[in-house]
Length: 478
Image (cartoon, rainbow, N blue to C red):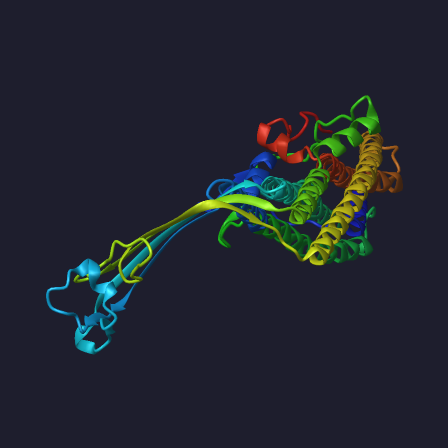
């Protein structure tokens, strides 16, 4: 009757699945810290944000390079130059320009190679904040992209941690289910033995019930095996491992994270969140960048002062006569230079005013985003904090219930062995013990995920992973 009762309990409770296969050469065992770190290293989501960060850094370097020699260029062109026609014999080359009959000869046979090179350098002296504002905006743009990288890293770390604990939960339930399957098998054999012996304490109804329970266990076995395969596949894909790789958790037990709540409670975590959350830093950097862009737009109201220098050299082969007269020059020969101070003023003041208004509107938008980001962080931290309290209380309650059910089962087993126990009470005790242990494992997993979420909402999860200060589990378990 005890064996039949056990089968009834197990049929209504947890399904069993078989022991895991022996590790293959492609099996990888990882701790929580190793899994999260690998996910951060290989995640294309994070890499995409890093690429955007590198783009912003290159844009900052470009803005900084514009501070000195804003325009430095070298232009080289080559073509053909004409020869000279009607040149009087014996006329000195530097006097040919005085003869009105001398003309350019564009006939194909008279053409000769011609080349010109010109170097130009422009250096701004005073731009009313345009250069400095552009550099500041680009620098704060890098801060924005850096914060976006950190934000995505927090998301990936939290998701990986949850997948890791999903796998640990299946391992814990697997061990529980293994014991259950053994009990089902022993109970069926014991009932058959008693029936063969003619024991009146069991009958065919007990055997049929055992067989029905066995089918229920088989059905649940398939379901749990598929869930476990899904958990492994999810973690493997998060770590971007090959399909032939089997991922296993290094930890053999699912135990709570050692992360007691800070004595200053909620205010402490809200302060951490406002200090460390990338969304807040992103909004702050965005405000600074938009302020700099407003200054850049306003600079167009004022004249820009700068200096420019250019040097050009034209050469025709063979050499054309190049008169040395200061009032006469040949565009196909000689050296020229222009150097001086210049002032540039954009007279489209209405357009400038519109650009300033646009920049100020964008600044106002980012300020509102900053306010919203701070409020969102406060809400998410408070929600995560209270969820940890609830999850911790539930876990502790499940732990106490698990211990109580264990004591109850041991008491009923002793009474039954002594001959004055009640079969129905023993069956209830077995059911309570199995269900309590399964619910405890689920509560531990929920608590650990809640802790990871609290660390994510405070912006400290990835830092603790990188610094090795995230302790995977406690050393105690029921």
